Image 1 (cartoon, rainbow, N blue to C red):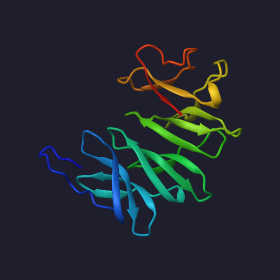
Image 2: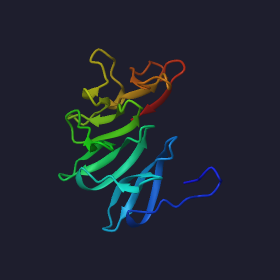
Image 3: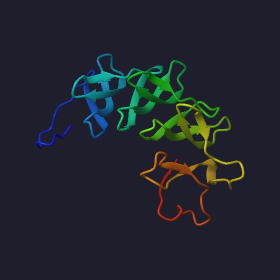
Image 4: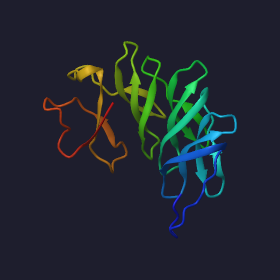
Length: 189
C-alpha cells in the first residue's frame, strides 16, 4: 500500500507466498486476496489497527475480494462446499454472507455502495446471466424487467447513471443503437 509519505507498505500475507490488493477506502482499509499457508486463496481485509484479517470462505477452499465501500464492507466471490461459485458480502459484525442466486449455480459481484447494497450478475437455471441488486433488507433482486426488450445472448447491462446517489447502479434495457443512455457509463456481463 502506498502511504501519503510516498513509501510503500507491505501488508503481508495470510501465511502463503503472495497477496494482492483490489480496493482501498478513505480510512486506509484495504481489501484483497492472499495465498494461505495451506495453499488456497482467501479474501482479506487489512486495517491499520488490526492488520490482515482472513475473511474465510463460503465452505469451499477459495475466496477472492472484488471491492469495498467506505464502511469497510467487502464484496467478492467464494466457492461453496458443493463447488458453486457464489458472491458474498462481508461485514465486521456479520462475517461472510452468501448473496444467493437467481436460481442458477453462479453469482459474482460488480460493486457495493455505502448502504451495503451490491450489484452483479447471476446465472439463471437456463444458463443465461442476469443483472441483480442485493440489499440487506430485500436480498437478491433480478434487475431485468419482464416487459423490457431482451438483451442479446441472455445478457444484462448495468448502466451507471448517478455515481453520487445511494444506489449508483441501475439496469436499463440496451438501446437499439447498443449505447448507454446519455451521461452513463457501462458494465456489461
